[in-house]
Length: 424
Image (cartoon, rainbow, N blue to C red; front, top):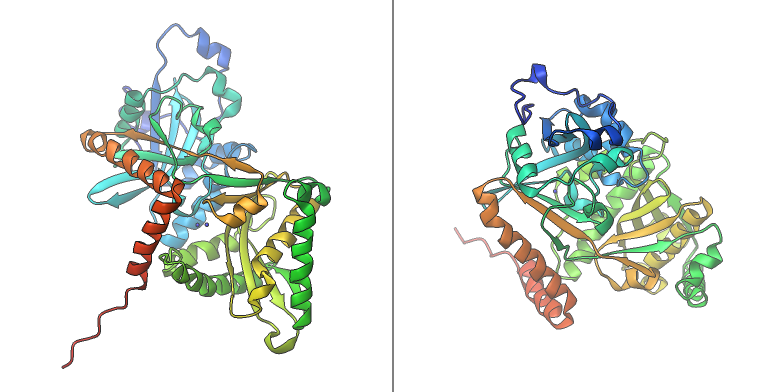
């Protein structure tokens, strides 16, 4: 499943005196602890990714950092949607230890700063220097708010959403108020022994389902598992997904979050961007029929991101008008997971959202955390409302009866026909 001038805090008055955010860390954790003066949290703000390039490149290379804060993801989001960036560097005593690529969203008159592109992300970590984190003091909500506000962040509140508990326990998030995110995420551990992978989730049944799907598709002319190895093929698969997904969402009474040229532009930019290891930022997969009446039809599509042996499924779709009994979506997941295992990846992450197919594939479930930092009076007044809405959503999703009721009401709204035009 896929939504600024430079200033500094604590006595630094102009850009001429600001710390160079691309400079390497020069002090050791021991030196920080030995410092007799009170530690000082400062922040630097810039809208220009190039000014943070060196630090960003170094921090995103850590395996623990999410792909969703990478330059590839954030750059594609900004370029595709035209969203302005607010790139924050946090420093303790002038030493940078975290980089936070943010955007500012307006909701009901409230300005909310959040991770760039988080509307389509599955897990956020920010970017943190884990090697130098031992000597970093936890940032109190007041100190962090003061640093961000004085840096010039034009927001009422910052919402750091969809973080694992391990991430939320690290500075700069560790002292912030938090609430559990409304949705968990689901993971399948991998190994190069695909039989061992399947054994975690009833391998005998899973292989039987694969054979049934395989036979049914072979009976109508056969199929192949295709990938977007070049830009043309990737964009072809993306356009098929964007045509298939609204049909499925409408049938479930859900709004089409993928509507709009900006979303297509973002995903297209990501699919045609190459990461440092030469991999596409978004890897497209599909099941294509090769014979019979529907030769050339693509009946299932999925998009993956891969970073440091962590594969994340960003989205998926199926065409239920062709061979609906073949379970093409399940077949595609089987093929993608088999391929990921053979490639030596460590985990196949099905992303955020509690759905039956994810439960059937995943022995692991991760509860995610949302942290927030009000920056002014308006933000402090809104914080209980924001956290309350998140808790309410979580309560609804945890109750089958409430979830069905809300889905029914939402379905009425989504399927409600447009009013007929008035006669002349």
